[in-house]
Image (cartoon, rainbow, N blue to C red; front, side, top):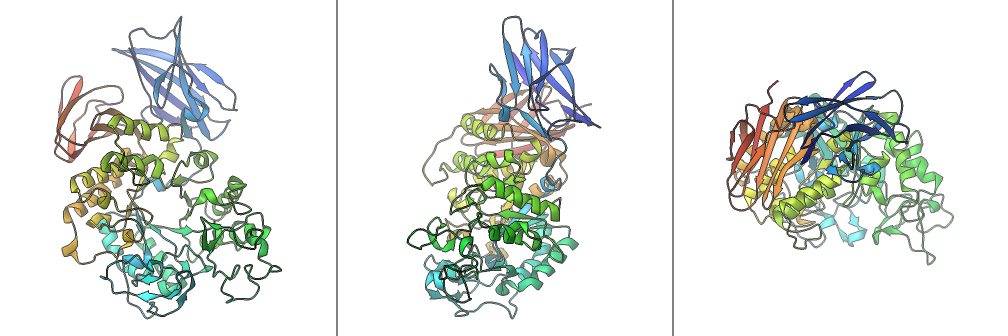
Length: 609
């Protein structure tokens, strides 16, 4: 028998000056003859013997890692040696083989990312659908012709249903001043940071077809409205990040100008100064984003694109980080697809340039990458601080609770498989990067989670507690907190129902409690994360920081019970139930859990000194 415990957080690590003090706990039938800390401060193996002490049935090992040399990402694991065999300890537990370089414990010292992000509760807003100020600037039916949809834009009443036909041309009047008017609501909910879908001038309602990168859309209130929003969010202590669409422009952008509204656009002029800003097929057609002709891809092989988007002193990436707008970061749309010659060639090179430009303007800006699949190459490369965590959170949670995969196909996951997926995905990512992963249940690109659950509010409660307590930063998609439903785009982009009679008040209260809990919990914002039990329909995990422990038990299906042994990780304490109806009783060396059917329960304690 061999069990090991270590997480890259206090109390298992202590940072003192230029030294990192590490603690590993073991329980085993026969103690190893030697335990070594393995690190790679200069990309070459370095082994250090750990000192040991017997603590009852456990063995505690200590080592000190010098931080005055080597790379910021401190990767390490533990080597255990007996006379005739060896074992290794990494973030996925005990193994016969040494963990790979990107499968070890990892801690960034110093941390190159923004420290503030992990403490936030984000809220995503699709500007046209959240709240309307009804100002004079608002769009009306027939305000302009939307070429991509081959129709005039239309203005709808707030409560009109969403219709699929012509949806990119359908406006409901939401704007930035409308968001300002609802800041008190968001404060009461516990929101501390806003992420807005694109706000720059563009013909569609979604604004991913940028026409002018240097102008907030007049129908949203223009630049002045963004300044007002920035000032008001600062007054109430909220952060603000915007959506940067740097992979492609809209075809009405003056640089491309398909509809000949400007001189010298690349579409119709082979001698245009912007011609090499885009990539063209031999027949003269443009290389577009996923075949959408209204979204021609930018060509980063062009020095002009590099200068305009990130490198120049007045580049787009820099401009909005400066006063009076002073945004707190960028969410970068389809970040993995950006590159040269109509594809993703030299993608990491240009993303490193974008990151460098952003950091020069604001060293604490949050760089969030959109990835629908595996984002780890970009996270390990350090070109983004966090990713929209579809692969590491939203998709496995959807599979476990709703029984469907990312493509909407049926899937059946046991708790073991779900835990292995989520633990395996994040293993090896620096701890601070894990804390900055952007955990959403849904977004403007997916069906609402409540709809995926077919209205099952018990499972929705399970998902919400999971979202707020799993490692990473939670982001609420506007309206989820009051029970807004909707299928895939465009139905996931309904207007917010400001008639309180339409709200699910129990769900709203749950979101509010969880947001407030995060604000006062170091374990949830900064702590390590470890699955303690995963079998059948039951998944139990722990968040820990110093002496604070948060225990979360998810029970899908019939009621169940289980036993968790007390260990150097899960310690005795005064447990207080904060959510759910599960029962926890403590004995001398174990916790007994009784979990109701279709339930989630959260307990919190401070371990005994």
